[in-house]
Amino acid sequence: MDILDYAFMQRALLAAVLVGITAPAVGIYLVQRRQALMGDGIGHVAMTGVGLGFLLSWSPVWMATLVSVVGAVLMEFIRWYGRTRGDIALAMLFYGGMAGGVMFINLAPGGSNANLTSYLFGSLSTVSESDVTAICLLAAFVVLVTLGLRRQLFAVSQDEEFARVTGLPVRALNLLTAVTAAVTVTVAMRVVGLLLVSALMVVPVAAAQQLSRSFAATFAIAVAIGVSVTIGGTATSYYQDVPPGATIVLLTIGAFIALTALAMPLNRRRARAMAQSAGDPAECPIPATRDASGKVGV
Amino acid sequence: MKADRPGEPVISLRGVTAELGSRPVLRGIDLTVHHGEVVALLGANGSGKSTAVRTVIGQVPVTRGEIELFGTPRRRFGDWGRVGYVPQRTTAAGGVPATVTEVVSSGRLSRTRFGFLRQADREAVHQALELVGMADHAKHSVDALSGGQHQRVLIARALASQPDLLIMDEPMAGVDHASQEMLAETLRQQVGKGASVLLVLHELGPLEPLINRAVVLRDGCVAHDGPPPPAVGQHALPGHDHVHPHAAHGAEPVRTGLLS
Image (cartoon, rainbow over all chains, first blue to last red):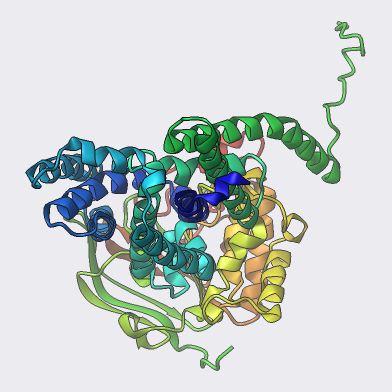
């Protein structure tokens, strides 16, 4: 395996695997809450963080984490209080975040949109030692939250109103979900890029749903798909000269299509088995006025 | 079950007002449910009956007045395992597949520490599923269920914490007659064990014999508080708005429960 001989590839693969685990692990709760595009919104806001990082000569990864956490919390507040025009407020947050990123990076000494490109579309081969440290710490936080609090997050994402009556701190858990999503976006930023982050959060979950009937199975399959495509995409980009971020996302969509095709006969068999266990015949009985050949008697 | 003396209030609202947006929905209502009582909250669409229930659970903020649960002000109330809640829903499904057991287990969280389910908790979940006749479907995805089965899952979820008080918001909406009878029987058993019940209902239906008292809301005020309205006709309730969500099923005759 000559791919593992290079330190930059070791770092790239480690970062890719961590993203493959964390993105679907958070994404499943966003999909469950029917907020599949929240990751996309946070990605846009994170651009302002990257720009600010360049302007203030701080680590763009940590600055992006900070700004996207603030953005995610703001989105959660808009969801609480802005019932009527919440979508407009969110749209402004997205576009403001994107414009802010472009503005700050061009204000930075020697900065141009070219610096932004590696964050927009990912730049796996330039992941540094300090990036890997940051990614490991952030990924550990995400795994701890999404697995450790899975029952609480499931309840809140399934039915917020009911969760309140079980005494769960619903607002705190919603904020935690938003913060965890924001952290995941910055973890994935170097690997697939801010513009494609949301794909890794949503598409593996959608693909897993084609096969699964339970939440636990959906979670496990989505993470398995996430890890497979991030490793597969990174390796492909090493052997063929293709951009890793785009390769990973296209592989994920390929997995979705393949699983959908696979699931169709499976679901049909399942439905038939369920009907049989309920004692229903597969077809309606033939009415007396019609014989088996389809001829209708009068 | 803790020893509440019969007759003590388990829910008490005094002079409660609430707004949605800036529109006043409740304009100072008093509502009490005593221990062991089954109270129906009736009224036309928009009369404030769902809002009243949602102030009790803290989903809608109260602008004036006091709410107590088991004698404790709601803000300081923490013993949520004693309350089972069935929200107004037509589906138990979310954006991701989940089994019947997974959904009903959520109802047990109020009795667990840090969400860790022990053997006793799993048994309570199974028992709740048996109570509503859904134990055979425990491993099925909720996406594959019929309307009546969804409602049974939502009720099992509320029963999973073995509550002393059940709060149900239109549990019969969109449910066929067979499931309605089933739910009435489940409720009868719970009441037999000493549970208190607050029900938002559009019509009394098969639950009529269980109900001790009816509170009728009209335009955010209490218009009637006493025995269930006498069966003198479909328009016995002030402002009764005659809508039948299950009429679409066609097969069952429309039963209002007010004529029977």
